[in-house]
Image (cartoon, rainbow, N blue to C red; front, side, top):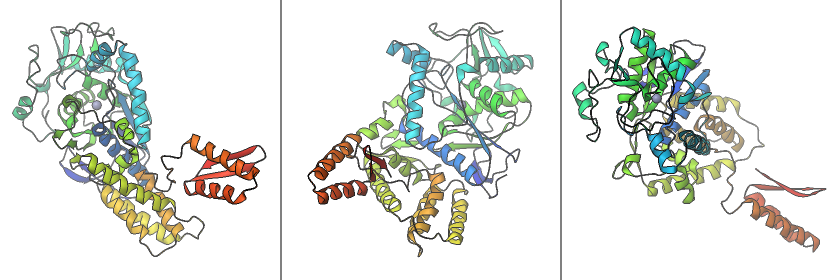
Length: 467
Ligand SMILES: [Zn+2]
């Protein structure tokens, strides 16, 4: 049970609500994972940063959390509609590799990127292709209970069978339908325009590599069913939080609710939490517009991925954020200064524990208020202005950083200090010692120390550690 209050904006109710989980012992959290047919762009990663902050905030407030994430390695078509060519298949064809090779490659790339952003890996990560039996079980029941129908080989969900198909979205039915891209051909087999495919056996694209046997014929699952299936399998019928980007609200999350609640026969998820877009100056940063800003792009420009995390945390997750390299550069400089200041604070003084507790309580109140990361960062600066010793300041900020995860107390290693450079300096120092130039030897040692590298002279030679 969390010992502090938590408030979060719920897309279902369109308001900030007090967070009360179904079961007080463990928060069940599901977050939509990446479609692994290319690198994640930094706009996608903004959503994963928000989800990481949410998970860590819950844990910081005293909740136990079980978080599950899927990896979409089958069934995600070239648009959010149910027609078109599968993105995975398209990517595999372009690279002349198998679909699963492509998926493995980009799954690993995704976790490398998220690690650089200090995003914790979810407790359970499950590829869509590992859970085919689960989807078959759900689809079979939906057919039995009349929520699904077969038409021209495919199984569709009948959205007209629900009282409130649109409960997650503000928009009216007509708005949503007109939002479907013009380039996508309407599927004539559907009974209603919003019906969606649960299982494909027929697609106008016959080159789908991955197919499975099922009671409905050899085929493959639609995209939406995988998240319902994986969530129900690992987190049960009562889900507390489901997250994703705002572009997932319709149709993906709307369809997840439809099929999950039709299947289990009662309300499913209490809180739907969505992160806003990252925009470029000329509009939404989406892959279809050819923008592919990735973590590698930032690193090529010598920008620490954590500076991007810092920039993201400077604004609220429900506000759109406009990306520019000028803005990132500015955030990067601010971040570097802050980290340099915090990491160099002394660690050998007596900690003022009552002040520490007071500021942890303040932090919990701020971050627990719909994840106000911008104010949480302001609180870091407030701590640095406190009339208290450096060690206390550092210890308070170390606590905040359990949620912010900006490595604030960790020493910065200058870009030019790589392993080769350190070895070169050690060799120079050894030479100085041989020449009995102890002044130079000490100077080299101190220079490295200032850069966060501590030398240790041992019987077997000089070793170093990164502070
Ligand atoms: Zn999903």
